[in-house]
Length: 452
Ligand SMILES: *[C@@H]1O[C@H](CO)[C@@H](O)[C@H](O)[C@H]1NC(C)=O
Ligand SMILES: *[C@@H]1O[C@H](CO)[C@@H](O)[C@H](O)[C@H]1NC(C)=O
Ligand SMILES: *[C@@H]1O[C@H](CO)[C@@H](O)[C@H](O)[C@H]1NC(C)=O
Image (cartoon, rainbow, N blue to C red; front, side):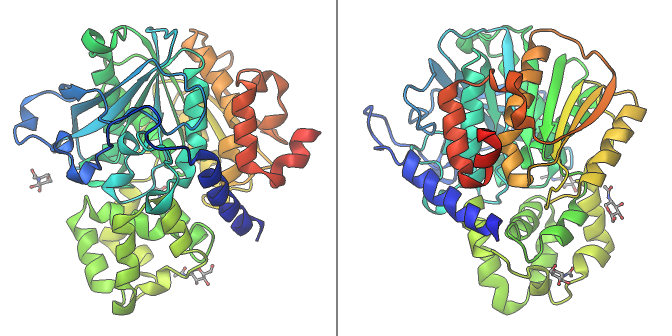
């Protein structure tokens, strides 16, 4: 029940705190991707190698999403670049490049947002231009907290790449595409020096939580084969989600039930077979409700399906577990298909109510057995939503180490901590005004932990 209260709290808080005047700096108008030619995949996209910059521009409206004053941004760019979809077909997507004041052009962080939605206009490249990225039908609950993490990284002087890793069709859960889009976004950013000044040999790291950990984790797994030339210093993966099938069972009829329709519709945006299944097996009376997720973002999805038995909206509720082709697609987009060749920091709530911790334990063991360096932190006093915030400082301090060129001391380590937030050295890496804003998002539930 606390969780339910908290979602409403987050929603109301984020709209209250971030509803700043839209045109304070005489900005242009942000154009939604569905109405913006910049996003169109060129017909000859297959002629350039993955990572090629096809177009670039200054965003039509300045980046306004942070709601923090002053926003530490010197400039920003959008890049349309070649990548590949889940089937290996050529496609293109957009990345936003954020350059802080006093930028260090030799340090780049690719931050993968947990968009978790199947609507193109929830893409971070668009949301970042909205003064209230969390408002109305475009609400992106998780992104609001993530904006603060992105801001914390900008405060380090790092260049940020934020790819629209769901690609041009908002194919949420088409995770091979998400990983490829992440790697190709890095390739594109490293070759953008002529207009961004990014050093072509910059040190690169990746960060993502939940849906963003799928994109980042897939990028880590694919890198040795898909982008062997890229030297990535490490990746921080939080709230990992190794197995999609399990998540369906865990979140049905829960706080996060809305992720089932957005995930299914997201997959249908890539797999014609999933589109067919939804068309044939969602009961007629639920089709309008399911259809909503095509035109709204995560927080609206969560609210519309709060506590609903989404699986019972199929004519056969067991279909996602019994239809062999559907099960295959779910498994194909889970994690653990390959062993990353870069160091990882993995953080996960032991009470994660979206994806059970033992599946991440198993994933980490598999990576370690395969030779990956993994620092794995299991956090007790958290849940899926809150660890995104309370685990952030420790993740950031790990990223600082790898971007500073430090190599992991031990190859693999696992620790179970009461709360990552209690680590005072970790908290030092985030400026106080960001910590305050983060804690605001958490409000009461974490209060007692912090005060202690
Ligand atoms: C994409 O790849 C699939 C599988 O290889 C193929 O069947 C399909 O025709 C391709 N689609 C396009 C648009 O090239
Ligand atoms: C959906 O979740 C509810 C609550 O956990 C459960 O009663 C129901 O059996 C689930 N449906 C399926 C098909 O797992
Ligand atoms: C996910 O879990 C299911 C059921 O426990 C299992 O059958 C499947 O192989 C797992 N998928 C992956 C990708 O690990």
